[in-house]
Image (cartoon, rainbow, N blue to C red; front, side):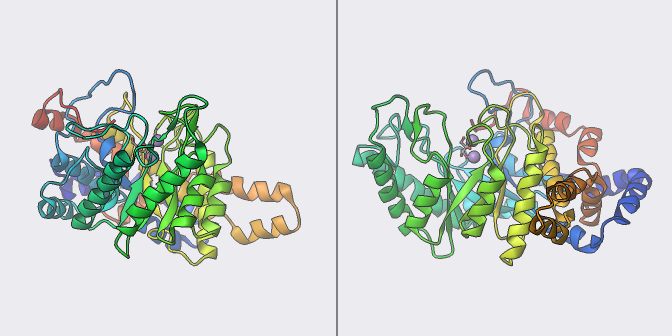
Length: 424
Ligand code: PSV
Ligand code: MN
Ligand code: MN
């Protein structure tokens, strides 16, 4: 199904009055409102192709129905999201979960929905049917050269698909690690990973980037070969300027100060971007902003300050992606909520009085520094985010419109009640 602009416009005209009142009230208090609105309109968050079905669990999977059966339908789903919020203008593919067999046709279909292809992701954490060697004991770090070669070739193949689709980023996450003390020689495993990455790096086109994701545990629970930002950064530094460190919010040990990690990676010019999600215990992949929205705001505060200091464009100079999916919500509603949470945190960070904050820091006025941050965080910026959407031709309230149009029922009618999308 495709959403018509008239659906959106007529829905908006119903909620216009209430929205206008809320927006004007807020606009009065925002000094540079045009700048903030423009930044919000430009900001786009990539949707992962693997989050369009119910998943994100090792246990039961309960389809809500109408899940996309193929890549074309996944693109259709992201097209719906983008029509509703005009902030989801790209899709990130995981290969081989989604293989673009006919890349020109897939690219053309995406363009019809005003979408482009964000980072392409490789998968060496599962064995695929017919594969010669198993990844049971890892991929790029494997002791057996033949396994490493297979994993390297897979990554290079993913880059080829990406080139055909107009992507310019290979995003790589390895599950390589060990489950028991003694299983692995840490130094050798790291060294082999580096050598494998060097071969992949050499095959990257000049204008491409390599995003190296880290994760402290799971599926290996004693050690992970790229376990934290330091290890990812070491690899990225050794590889060269095209290699950068990707921060997935759920991949840290409990209570890690992610905003500080982000600030320093940015300072070093080595921050790739994000896999946004939220968590309470581990790599929970919950809806962005559902557990700890203050942390998300603090991260965006570092991003805005750090990117401005380096003269970077917020919308385009880092990779903004969602990596969240789970079992109990309609995945499209969930993704709308995630994008909204990101836009809210970003808008709040744009409201921070950076000069006053710096002055407070210089004079060690801790109370004022905290007040300044919390003043922005406690501002209800939802009318601002909605206004940016309205200006872009999107829905003032995307989830409400999605429900009132009964999109899921329609998808179930088109696709069936028992479809299961590829992904985890
Ligand atoms: C691993 O936990 C991860 O965060 C990586 O980004 C994978 O590509 C993705 O999840 C798979 O769901
Ligand atoms: Mn991730
Ligand atoms: Mn993860």
